[in-house]
Length: 220
Image 1 (spheres, rainbow, N blue to C red):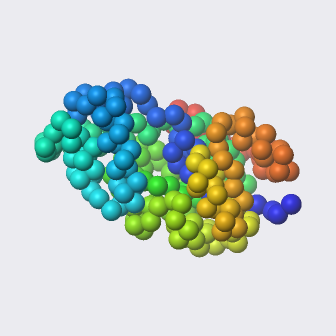
Image 2 (image 1 turned 30 degrees about the vertical axis):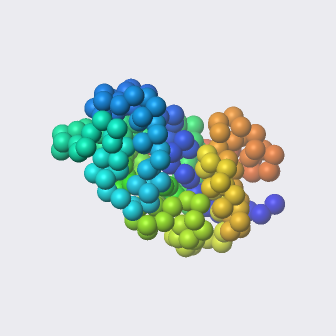
Image 3 (image 1 turned 60 degrees about the horizontal axis):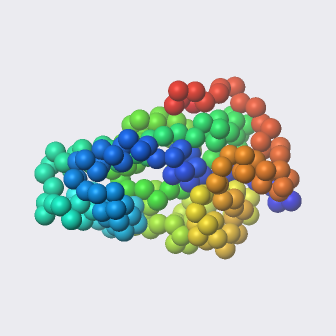
């Protein structure tokens, strides 16, 4: 068994919980879009927005194109705020485990495809993000998972050999890219499934670490 010296976390659907449906409903209302229109516009342009290739104004103008030639400043501000709310839900069991790792002296980091506006909003809301010693944000590098270079940046930041890093992400393409570079990787679908996989790999000792502070009410 190759030892794990560092754990690298994706943000969306790993550190965070399922997106907030009430925030999505606000986006629909602000942009006057149908569910189908917003879903298509939001996701077709999301990767380049996460990668930092386009601005928030460009992203939301394109996402809202079916009903708006141009968005007002108030609409743009409201859509950015709703997007932050959409991704602000938390995943308490994985956050509590991350804190246990940190208190045990195991390196932790975040590797996330995320635009600047979302990073800024989430870091203002979730102060625990600063407790992760390393962050790799896609927008700041003009790179995004599953591009190999973004994983190399995270590995360099953790100052740990790839084979000694465990990476968690919800998307199979991102897991495959990490494994291709030598990282240990687990696709996170649910916490129960994650713990079963950790047991299967003989990494039980990492689950049994006990921290001094539980994760409650959005704070570590």
